[in-house]
Image 1 (spheres, rainbow, N blue to C red):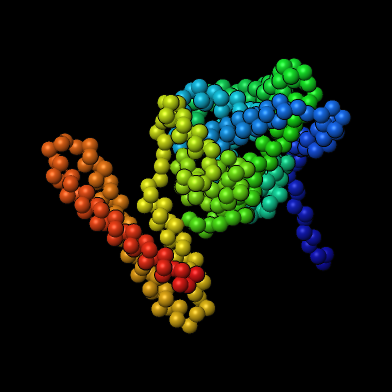
Image 2: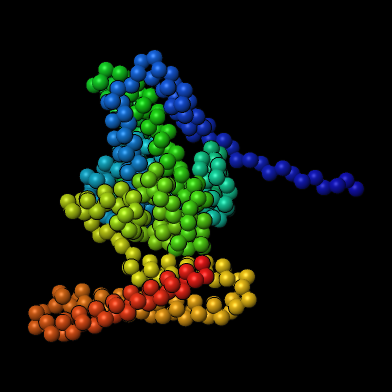
Length: 380
């Protein structure tokens, strides 16, 4: 009896168009552009337009494709959506409808190697670019059934229908036009065309790859997403990925004023001019509770080797429960206080009493936060 031979798994077919675009643009950027620059030189106009076009493309992806269309984190005026549609075609990352469909599948099945289109658990190369080089069969929906809401957006559907001509016009028309204006068509094609495209591609791809490998997990460890300030700088604020994967519908990724998140600033600035509305913000209580829960878990893991781990764990849990209790009371009264400001002036007395109560609860909450931090630091 002959032994049974294991049939080799057939690899998915290569997507030659994608391979050509990625490899040819890289060749132009790292070989042709430096050679041309050596013999002909580049002027300040090349670098200025590179910065402008690079920023325009990446912000169209992060603000438009990602936070607006994929996550519905805010609503945008048609003029803003039109700009995002053009910038997305310029970035050459498929139509907003297709991009959003893939991204919604990613969030629904994050880290599931069979369903997540760019699962980080399949390695850096796969999640960064490999998933686009072969026709992998994942949970992606060809009919965009997970984007029925987006099909109602006329600007988005216009871009989806005419994506190829728009991509060609933006990627050739803009550099050639700038080249005619500044008297250097080849130089602009290389810098604003190829170099810009490579930078757009790989800084965006970092969100799928490095942002799931490199950084901290202050809010959750239920997936591979990480927070990383360096990546946030390279990706226009998308580097605060651990926060994003637990609070995906928040228009912010960097929630603190000091965190670099230009995408958040663009959305907020647009709202001041009436171009963005219904900005979605996660309640602060949910954010702080998630952060405290994660800190509790990490600290409990650190004390597992200690003989008195049971007593310490109980102490940590008591402090955590007290923190959450104070937190809930504080934010409930704060909400009540804000609502009372909108009511009739007749209730001024009740409002003043509520304000006194709020100040006391705020002091208790701040003190409990200090107690919590001191307790955790003892065993960190």
